Length: 315
Image (cartoon, rainbow, N blue to C red):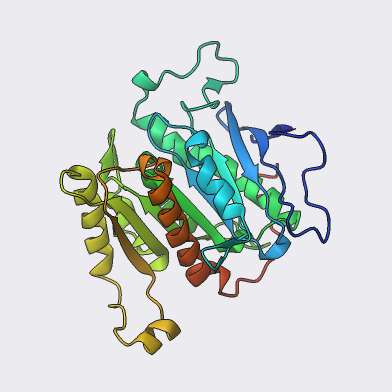
């Protein structure tokens, strides 16, 4: 079961939404506690949009031994109305995945989760439990007309990129209900230094699925300077696997504008990887602009009708 146990302001305890007509005022970040079906006491931070039903929701997933704080700067930037001349103003959700940040306790278990003892089952639970709790939060915000879940983008860094890929496949595998759809919401992925394997968890099945191979728009970002080693090799391998089964980008500028590609490979001049890229001021600004352009091209600029959604678990 997933419940929204508490909602607390990260700053001023006043109203969370911007005043109507005050386009310069953005809602402050809000910390939310959830409980997953297996009892994890989970925390996320929500950066609301002022665009209502037109808002693109972005879920940002930190890396191994990280937390939602690693994504805070990027989240605040993506919440802004304009980034490098690109439409933005997105609704951003940044969870602490299990064993990380403030998501370290299971209900009725006195001991916190020990990262050093985490096994494959714990990483699988990030996909089957943590992300499904996030999904139910998204449905709640969609039905409150605060965002359009049909435009969902997931950003993941190293371990978070693996979770993003595997959860996207799970989301697209859920059958529709007679009363409407309950999955197939992820439309785009941003993968920062994505690994092929991590602690016994593989991306092989995800990369072989139609969802990742050809179904979703994908932006891969990686440090590519000499000495980056496995991180760059893995990202390059993932890009080659996807590029081999997708149409080649048009060379004519006018045709490119009319039919833009849905796969982008962004090799940065740095040895930094994962969320370390975001910590560098110059690189962080470049990555923010690249992500904003990608989302504007593949999501914000396209029509995805908003609709009310039901929670298939009835919570």
